[in-house]
Length: 365
Picture 1: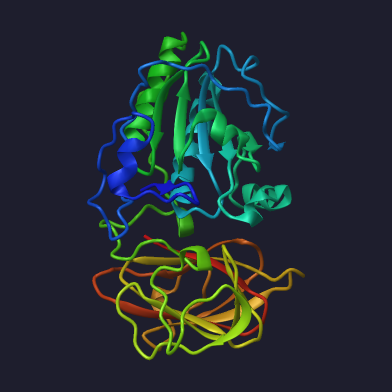
Picture 2: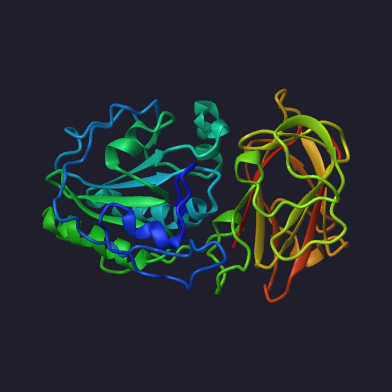
């Protein structure tokens, strides 16, 4: 699964325009058409590793340069910390960094933001610590590295050989065996003679756990006015600015969502003006996530979720208790629902007991 760069979201029919690389389907197309992974393929021309000088900051390492990396095999992973597709690749990337570091592999996480809050170096530093990432991370808050590499989606892997040439590129989740074989091949080409030939099998939980056995029937949904697809209300439409009072739609069809309470609507997010506001969404998927953040003063925001009008019980996500309660403390992706099965539609409701929460996007798995 891949996430095409904002603000120009490209659906499956347009993916072929991405820079003359061949794509291979990993899953059947979902409702939004983004369940794809690209086979790791070699570009017709093998360009050199671009300059890394445009990074805003470096985490876990002093600044690295393309010249200093000569002689090393390099894996560059373009990611962003609130992207579920990126989070699910991290167990593999971390395992590769640990397994092959002594054999000459250097992993660099190029963190390019999707949302404005991801531009903050301190937010990225906290995420790197919380996610237990120990390899170098280049903070690409101005998208300088993103543009230099010609990247157009999260996550994207670039495989660089010991001569400093980009040999392969791979988009999206999945095909981890192929990616690891590429690493092994490039290390052996570089003269490493004791490169392991087995494959990692990481066991991850929470937001980093592997995607479900079939694609969700619900697709990523942005909540700002710029792309408020699927919004319905008892009266009126989603409007820029505010705050305004919204009355929830009495019924929702699959992949529709609604608001109740006083909300301000901005380009990338919703902001709750008074306690007691809620968001409801009818979905079909194993997992439901929501990108959330506290208000400008950073005070935690308490919330309560319901599934079909009841506490989630065993279907609660890793950021929710069985009674449906939870707290928004930092800007990140929150896993609110994790079901054993995903065969039926569910009505999800989240009520915020405090004001000023920021809500950005739903994602599913």
